[in-house]
Length: 111
Ligand code: HEC
Image (cartoon, rainbow, N blue to C red; front, side, top):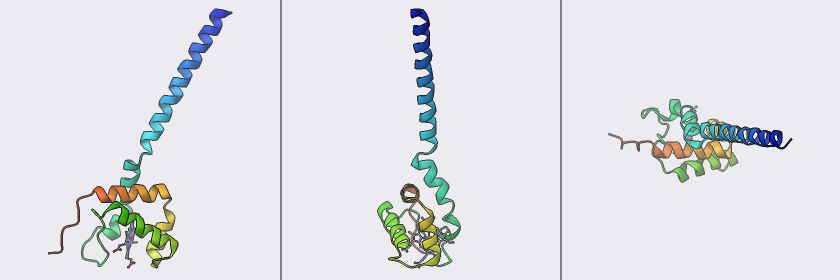
């Protein structure tokens, strides 16, 4: 009986370790870096080119991007497209994409 209990607790310990390892894998996959880069791909078609009148936001301070997104979301700044973009992002997503964009090479000054 005791032996069986001991084997059972070993099994439980192994199960707990396996679940913990799985939890870590999930956390890594969802960490802001990967998420921010993924989301920023959706901004690039509009914000990537320099000659279309849409501001290039790569390299902007993280706080400024987050603040703008919050303003579009709340309606403090009005713009149909950006209101939709901002409202489609959760707080976590807005933070992740702002962090990622802020780490990109700053946009060069206009020639
Ligand atoms: C379909 C085109 C489009 C997409 C996609 C888009 N934007 Fe925009 N964005 C615009 C336009 C146009 C403006 C200028 C709006 C205005 O005049 O207020 C703008 C403005 C902004 C501004 C403010 C710029 C400034 O000069 O104050 C920020 C910050 C911004 N966008 C962030 C993002 C982020 C982050 C994403 C991706 C998650 C994104 N945008 C996706 C078109 C887009």
